Every structure is written in C-alpha cells, then in structure tokens.
Image 1 (cartoon, helix red, strand yellow):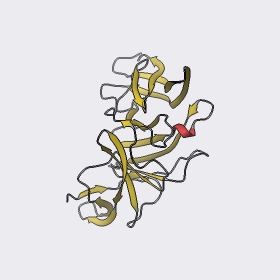
Image 2 (tube, rainbow, N blue to C red):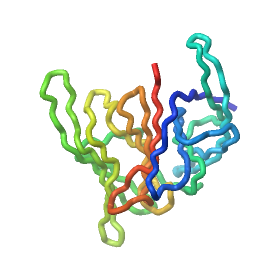
Image 3 (cartoon, rainbow, N blue to C red):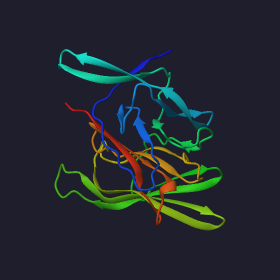
Image 4 (cartoon, rainbow, N blue to C red):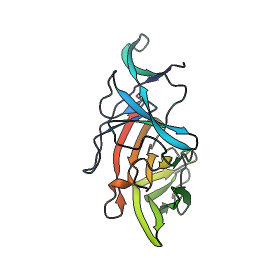
Length: 233
C-alpha cells in the first residue's frame, strides 16, 4: 500500500459561527484547525461511483529533524492510494450517497453562473461584484464586494441565499488572489448546497473555508469554519 508523507507547516485557529457543529476540518495539504492526535480516525471525502462518501482514514504522526535547517518537524502518513478532497473529525455529516461535484477549483468571474443539480433540484451560483480598473500601467484591476448568490426553486417558489463575501481582491494573470470553488454538494443532508472554497490570496498561503446551507440565517450563509496554513520561507 502506498504511503504518503505530508508536512505540517503552520496551524491556524478556528472560526465558528454560533450554529456550527463541534467538529474539526483537516485539509489534504497539511493544514488543520483544532488538534489532530496520532490515534485519531478522520473521515476523508472521496468520490465513489458518481457520488461521494466519507470513509475513515487512520492517520499517525512522525517527528523528524532537518539537519540542514536545524529544526524539528511533524508529519503524518496514511495508507491510502488516493488523496481525499478534505478530512473531517467529530462531525455528523452524511456518510454515503453524498451528491456533489468538483469544479476543478473554478473561479467565477463577475456575472457568470455555474449550474448543477442536487437530488433532482436545480441550483445556480452567480458571482457578483464591482470591477475597479487599474489607473496605472503594471497595476492590477481590483474586484470589490465579491460574493456568490445561490438560487433554486421549490414547488414553483424561488429561493436564494448569499455566501462568500470578500471585500476586495486583485485580478491578475495567475488569479492567485481569487476565491476558487473546490467542491459543491450536500454534505449535511438538507438537500441544499454546501461549499468548500479556497480563499487563498497568495500561493504561499492556503485558506480553506466550509459553508453549510444548514447554517443560513436571513438568506446569508456564512462560513462555519476556516483553516489557514502558510509556508514560512
């Protein structure tokens, strides 16, 4: 069985809303919040036959020493041939037959839409914001007040909720600073859209956020958890 080593760089703090479940999230790049112990069993989100499943993955830790840089590091390994989208610990999510799609870290430009279906219900995600053109050569345009609006219909009635509000980010050729959708689906079992979004604003620092539809209030869906990890060169 293949063994994969991942190095832990910097661990972040947890951001939880008042309605959030008591759980932890662990990103495959080695970024986590909360505490991960050697005896922990995490559930990894894997694609299986067109749907998704949360399957247990046993993680153990190793401590090593880099003689060149003279520091100790921690790393974990797991006996899985494939890497899950993300890990969860102490959750009450669905285990099997999770409807979802992976849009390959799609960046939605302003006024563009992404459509998909969850359990026979059609959804649309539309991006909006304000473009501020650069005033000097060599400077990047800015996008202000960027957010996503999720719309769907139920029994002929249209519903919506807003999510992912980002005050501003730069538009550049590599789009490092733009939010990217990692996964769309229904992980909490309420037949509505949940999102995992990469909100990183530089390639040196990962910010991964989880948005659950079960946390919507007043047509707004805030992130229930964010994890952040940065390379320190």
